[in-house]
Length: 404
Ligand SMILES: [Zn+2]
Image 1 (cartoon, rainbow, N blue to C red):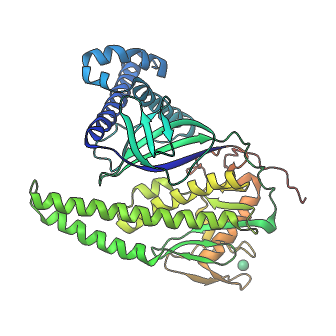
Image 2: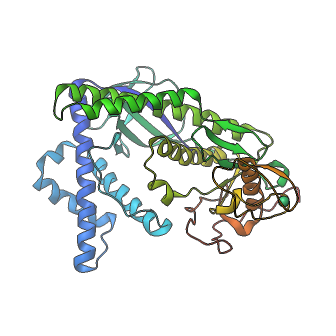
Image 3: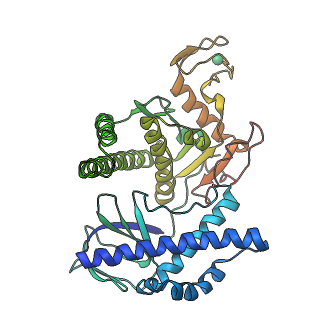
């Protein structure tokens, strides 16, 4: 199984300059290759492969000699990443690959091989950069795959090492109704998620407080004159606040996803695909942060299920999951967003909107025609968001149930 280990690095000033050069060079190559790919396709109808792009690298280096100071393999991995972005675009209908911006809050580059770690001396040796002080707070064993070096907007450096421990992944859990947990992600800013067991998970209060602070800081930046020293200072403060929120959020998501996969009563976890298109339209800050949190949460659930032998079921987006009575199937078309509770006119059941939705997600996921992805069995495909009800793509066959 593959597992990534992330460590904080403390590079010297000269090393920072070299690392930054690697980051700039990889972004430069990535963007240049993307441009070439687009041009070759538009002008000659030709598709440039990763191999073609790597073959063009030596000539490109002659044009831009500063690229020679950067490890060739890191430049090649930029081409590889671009290739992967195109594969995802064609296979999973994800967005067309974008040019990388130097304004992105986290900048990174990859080192596929020829790096070494020294746990005892707390050093990592990177090609063309040298030994960097690194805090190895935990040790791993296994084969090191590629390393990703990143820097945050507040100047903290990290290295994430992908390690193959050579062990097979545990068998995914068989699907049965009793041990399936449905999860509905909330619509309000206070609620994070609701489980089919009736449990509601609130967004932690400290997260909400930090959001309030973020708004204040943002206002301060916009009041300062452009290009001024004070504005620069406020921007730094804002970046630190953003980073703090990201850390708090990741901590919360890690704990919650770990709790879910550790539960005995949740051998199978059912979730609804997120409405990605709808999210991108959202301009409200708190909402956009919740949206990012949910997709992160699902990604964490995905790999934690794989690691702990659980099965994750994904169904397409059912708009009416909160509008259908989980008892009798009555469709309540009049249910508005503001209605947190409702009584089914057909069978008289009193519903909490979100708990009802979570139960429906569980029920729908257990009918295999509704599935868009099963992981723990094979990699999921991206949600068939735009598929109408009843015509959903089956991407993975669920495993036969053990209990029958
Ligand atoms: Zn009913």
